[in-house]
Length: 195
Image (cartoon, rainbow, N blue to C red):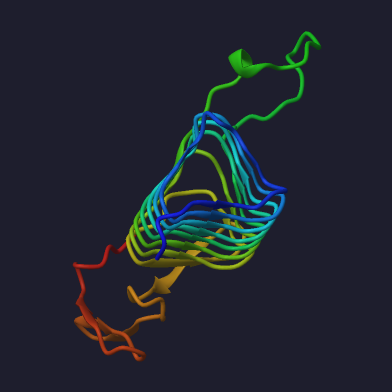
């Protein structure tokens, strides 16, 4: 992988953002001030990265995903197209007295997506949650609570549907262990969280 940073001519990247070597930022993406993006990341077309967002190394964010202030993506995270990671539990455009809300009128509820986790296309993560290491959020899921390590969550609201291997395939239950039919890796019950 080259150490050179590539930023497409149509992308808007703040000079106050930090971009790691080998990162590629594609058409019409926007990276705001104070964002930190690690090494060898890919930001697809129309990706929005809000101010102060922290993104680790080798993260892949697909087209039209929105990553808002307060979000941390650890190393190796995958964000599918049109996914939205939010930050305000009680969103309003105006205050009770009718003034336009400003940054001083709301409180950020952070989201953390841990190492190796995947967020499916069109998924929505509500504020204040953590997605555990190597977990998988299904396409279109609305995540309202924490996802355990290697947990697979599906639906609206998202519910735990099983566990996935670090390679991404669903694990099969064989009594006291979970086995990946794709790569053969096995996990003892208790080494993968119950949720």
